[in-house]
Length: 229
Ligand code: MD3
Ligand code: FE
Image (spheres, rainbow, N blue to C red):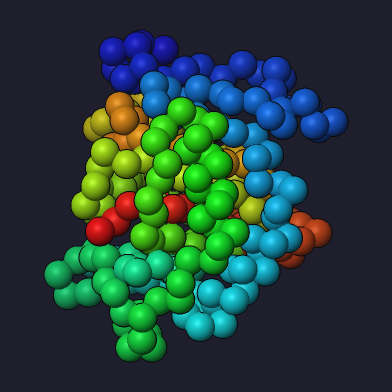
């Protein structure tokens, strides 16, 4: 791969970190400058996180947003925090209220806060002061096309992503949509932290394959902790 075109993506070493016996756990894998995969970091607390997702969804249920272009997103989402990511007539916005309920979004569960701090610490970033958490729910076939996360006010702070349930293949790109991408498998309990030089990289998720996960059933969940406001 051409380094300048890819913006410094670190290639995948097949087989080295994907040992099902658990040798991936505890590693810190640099995906690109300032972008780290922490395999299995959340696996021990996955049941607690999954339960907390249920508490959030009981107050603000999952919904399929319609993009400003008029497309129904295949990923269902909800939020917790002092603001949540949603759409309105102006486009994508962080809003203090859930438009579906008219009420504030549920608060960020303590288990999310603690994991966000631990992840930024292990990845070598200053502790994240997240005030928004986007919760994505993928069913088989759901995907996320290449995009940048750039609606947050403080782009100096990283984003922490936590994967639960069915596995996914995510795409990590460069700084233009047309730049080359690398594929990477994300499994239950995996955490990714990206900031600094990689904060505005394009990224996406390939369509999820159907399956059944012992904790999460037919779904993949992804939490992203953000400094949005
Ligand atoms: C970017 N969600 O909600 S971030 C989103 O799996 C979103 O649902 C993804 O993108 C999901 O906006 C999780 C995946 C990711 C991983 C590594 C990155 C994005 C990255 C490294 C650099 C830049
Ligand atoms: Fe994103």
